[in-house]
Image 1 (cartoon, each protein chain N blue to C red):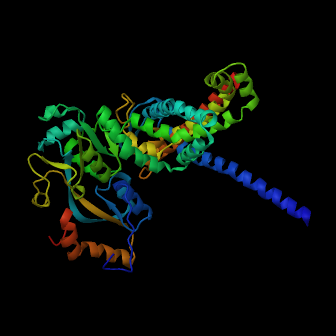
Image 2: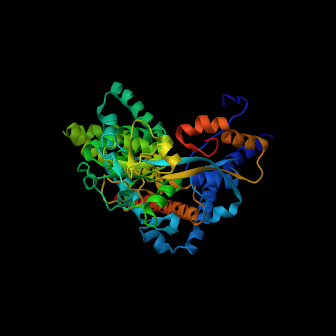
Image 3: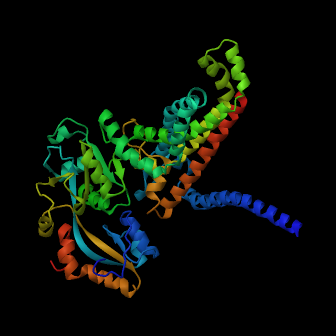
Length: 282
Length: 221
């Protein structure tokens, strides 16, 4: 009896774990089956390298969206990472327990806010500010940067703080005992040890930024053109899929699924590249 | 509905193409569209029921001094040839162009009437609904956009097209150039309730008291 129960439980846990794998496989197969037929109509080269996207005339070139996704993601990382790392250093090394216990829950709360709320916040607050500063409509790449930077801040800050806190106390003590000031101790002792952790945090932030859809769609202006100016509207892969999936049919729908494949490949290869380089550094 | 407390009608937005798709697949009993069916859609044996005439209003920010735009000027703006308000006799500021997404029947009707065979410039802010267009125009000084007359409110300024202001009267007389029909779509035989709803909307009461406030009724004028 006991043995049977044991066996049952082991299997239940295994099936739970397998379900996740099956889920990933099903999603990938489904997206591939819906997306690949497009390439009998449009060549892969035209699809990836043409900048003309106009579904009503069956022209599907997604270069503007690939560039848009990269520009938006890296801009958000450049804005968000220093902020997040500084937040983490402050929480882990500088703040006294009372301050830390007020700020940390607030940062954690930031991670739990639904992305549509960020989008709404972007439209109501960030768009008018950017419009007042740079003119134009305010629906542009720079607005997307700011909104995304706030969205990825908690992810990067929390993971960085964890890895800073895991640096043994002894190292800090030794560093201070050798006459280092607090800042020297953080810079020469804590941060180098934490670097792989920070890189991991940035990868996760990047994953969130490149996949973020609704908040970006609400503020970026959705123009299907290669970004020429930071204060002009543009599109990302995800924003186009979200905007057009509701009504797309036929080749247009296949093209959106094919964009899903491209997004999947981009995000997995980005993660692989960053992981490989961080391993070499460690 | 107040008059029929036992019944509920669920309405979902998304643009004309969504309405056509939903009626075609049977996801909705009635699809709503502001454009004619085309291509594959014509083969889908959908029944097309006109329910109202609608005007498309061209709107600008209330701070804009422009009062009238010609159809030619509109075409040059929306194909990207005119880029500054000073070319239209306004202030020296770059035009912020607001357009609808490709699912929009309003975009389709506007494009057909104003652009003809020319194509929209891609250098525009794309928004997925009339409400979003209105909200940008009401806050961005240099913006211009277009939307269904029913969505116009005090937060935006309507400009005349070829010296005709879009009013229900002008649409009825046929002098305002930008107008189109609004349709219900059904597939196959509807159930009794759906038919009752359609009859209700086409009935004298709704056409006269409700439809005529923002649109031009197709019946009981």
